[in-house]
Image 1: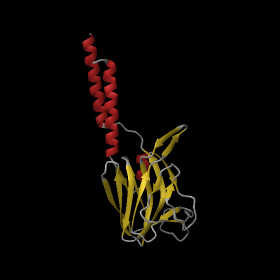
Image 2: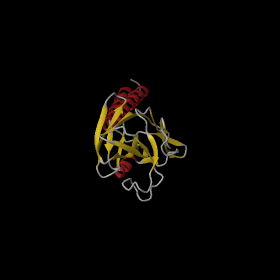
Image 3: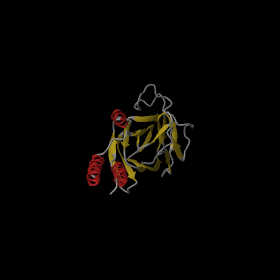
Image 4: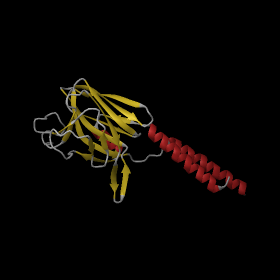
Length: 220
């Protein structure tokens, strides 16, 4: 085997393994501060253009991520001074939320956008989060649909008001929010993970280096 072939095979194997591991691993969060630390690169969308009681069929966020194909109508609402249990109150007047309009279960598709990580540089959104609040307070469940056909369900405690829910990693194609009552969700965060070499990638590099040693020995 020539040196070029060893390097090509090593690069291909490392790329395939990294992509497979990255798609398979999804971490969920109920703490925004922890999500921000782990994600690193992110941007928020607190205000989505529209008027109260609009019924949008899709929502496009500042990073280009799209929520659409809602299973039931949602109302566009603006947080006011009476929303004392929404984050950052008092002071977050104007924050956009989407209300489930009496439905206790809502599914929608998720299409990732990009996060601007610097000049002339954009990174695909592979981390996402938002705040959600049941009305009246209670627990609710959020299910993530993955491109692999699998799903992840997490119970979130909404007894004290609005709570953050987010994830990082993997390829999420859709979400389902369910509760015993209706709910509002908004204040979105789009993020891009900082690439970290996986242990399997290190192993491949070690294997490749071993192959290079064998090639050089054969040549000598």
